[in-house]
Length: 31
Image 1 (cartoon, one colour):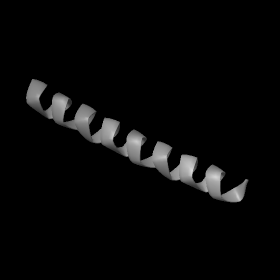
Image 2 (cartoon, helix red, strand yellow):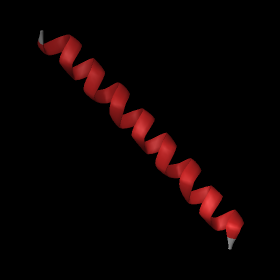
Image 3 (cartoon, helix red, strand yellow):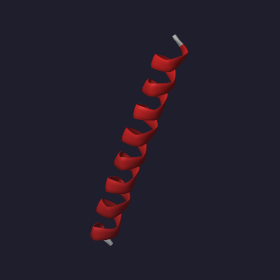
Image 4 (cartoon, helix red, strand yellow):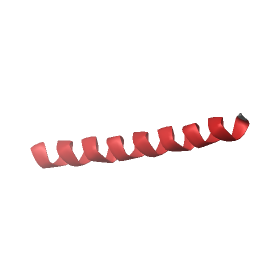
């Protein structure tokens, strides 16, 4: 159970990082 939670946390962190970099790239290109 705890391992599954840690795995989800890692996946969520990766998704946030990817989305953040995508938004950062979009803002850089748009300006």
